[in-house]
Length: 218
Image 1 (cartoon, one colour):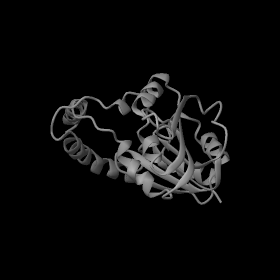
Image 2 (cartoon, one colour):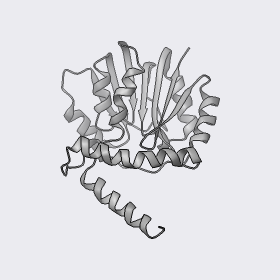
Image 3 (tube, rainbow, N blue to C red):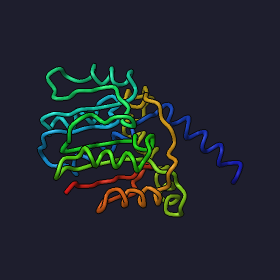
């Protein structure tokens, strides 16, 4: 059994290399369900190729995306219609957040690149009264519950890859070309720090090695 596991993992890696799908984009519609039907302004932190920012623009008067990678920001601008109320800038939110306060702040698969508590404090500072913060983040599995979710996620991941790629080999989506890094914090650590920084925050584990964090500014 021990010798079989590495071969299974290698086979899965090869499969997903030829049948890639964007785990983060999978949660974009869930993010929209947690937001008002209309709002004035939104900030998408770690906006990547701009897929979520363009979705937010269907409800917002103005959307601003910020990402540290100039190549992916350039691609986001190319993919965005000139008339869309969306702008993108290259920037490092560890040093400076875009000025102003926003009705909605989103952050997908980015906060684990940042000092976690400091990032949440910055988001809170720039969230307008009555505004909503939604984070989709990654965590490091450690507990028995984490392992059980992982056990369900692996076959579900294969099924989703087949469905989204219609069983065919597919190129890697533009949204998946940005640099990545593994998560360092466990879900328990994330919950503890988030509850300290954002009283009343709601967190939930999700499939595909993600969690959601939702908080409303009073």
